Image (cartoon, rainbow, N blue to C red; front, side):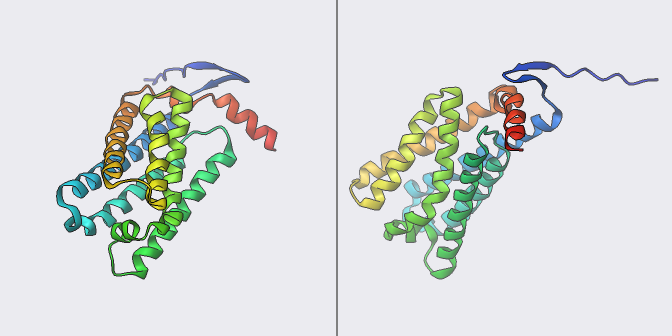
Length: 213
């Protein structure tokens, strides 16, 4: 008995036809899974800050670690046409992680407490969130999602506001809550979005690869 396989659907790209393979689909699923874990980790950490305050700071380090790893997984799988931009976001993620690890090992204080009490540390750990903002910007540009447009502005506004000390506490709390809520909305909408748009036009990737060669 012979087994028949369903032919792959052919898509018309800017530089030719292409098909979407199971590996392509898996990469999108992993990308979205990383975003979901990152969003939930960030939302849980934010909820702990509001509900338990200083008593929860030790848990925030572990939640940040989970968020950072999940973000790295997503950055490894995201489809971005411009390879230098993709590499730059991954470099930002790595720098932010290295600084975070250094801060966590250098002091006996929880990481979140160090960042809050010493805003200058944002110059290092902020690279992680610059990478996250890059994903938000990419999603806003490609899919015109309202939540990613707001997140692209909220993340640097909160970090720079705390770094420069010109945001009142209530302002920081509002931006943090908005960030957490919109991040979860974004992750949920990514889960239910059709897969092919996240893969993009594979003929463009092939064209750029040949141009670099």
